[in-house]
Image (tube, rainbow, N blue to C red; front, top):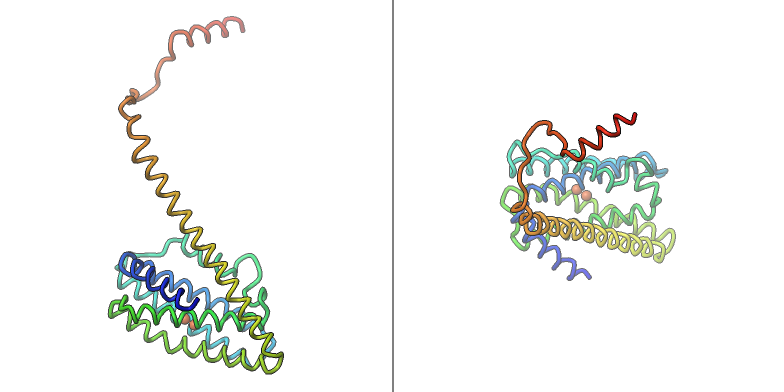
Length: 246
Ligand SMILES: [Fe+2]
Ligand SMILES: [Fe+2]
């Protein structure tokens, strides 16, 4: 699974970084921003005083990462490239802060820690694949290097907490939490991919419809004269008859 995932990241990365580098950077920025919100919510929700400080530091790191990616996106796409409200709304919906419970509230502390560990380890692996395949320009690579050492800290503290959980509740509880999170992330990834394929297919069909099917009808169409038109004679006489009956 790991090798398959790395191959997939390498393959999709080839296209994404070449064709839409600013989009990639903006999307990373939104993910980091969403993670920061999840972590701030965890700071408020946890009952464990010993871990609250780590959650807080983690939240600040993610907030800073969001800024680094946003800044890099501006450098790549130019100062006029602004995020649309639709993208902002997408970030909030995907991270589940609005209109419901936070990630921490939905998962509980054990699964939340497993989520942090899995998500951070996946992110480090993803950045590693991009670097190994030489997909990034020098500026983006420098930005990633600044971020990567924080991400390694996020992996190590969440792993440490999971190890502590293994000692306290048994290895099966920690392993089960990691397995649940991996499965739910796999399902979410599959649904996201299906949605993107759906969008791609509907764009393709609409393009075919407007580009190939509708244009021939233009040959038989003619523009109407502008302004109000008198109705045809039959319609006028029917209307007159009705008026005279009334
Ligand atoms: Fe981050
Ligand atoms: Fe992180």
